[in-house]
Length: 274
Image: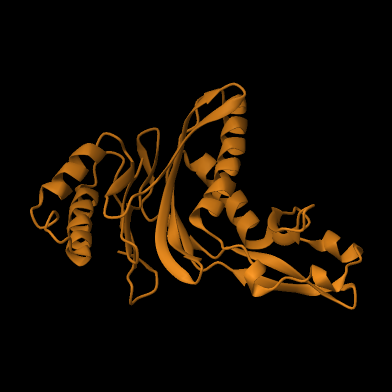
């Protein structure tokens, strides 16, 4: 399985993950990076003299996915999701003229065949922000489709847990946000989804359910963790210490390398593996 611990404030985040992939109780890979960064963007069509004149691009910044569960499902979900949010999103106008981002399998090539009025163009105020909720909506649809496909073909329940996190920018203000999406059951014809937002200053873990309660209890039992006012640097140090100790035990389904993702108000997101 896996252990990933996550903690964030409005302007800082920490995620710590082990690196072990196991199958049927046997160790397969020790050096997997279970926290992956990606840069979502959507294409913005430009019109000149009533003709399509190429695309500009709206970049949403850097976000991350941390994962646990069945690696076959995870690989398909992440490949499909990152393909959508990095190359297939295109800004267009809906029937009422409202700027709306669409997932286009043709990556927007079909827009070249149309004719346009010049007021079709988009201003900076027309650009919808790329938020965690926007990305999670796409991710949930991908998980639902992949897990339903898996359950119907493998004749077993899916098992995937993903934490999606990063700094979204809304009205020119950046803030850290995160959501967890899980699928561990299938009721024909639909995958059963659990989804929730991660609250600031709260430690959340995904992965091996047999160790999560004791891990969180040990973290929160440290008196410095519950200091008032809370200290973000102290909290992240305590979380790292406890998760690294668990990984170093190297027993069961948790072990291997340790990957740490960190960002603060003064430093951009950095992912390191030890």
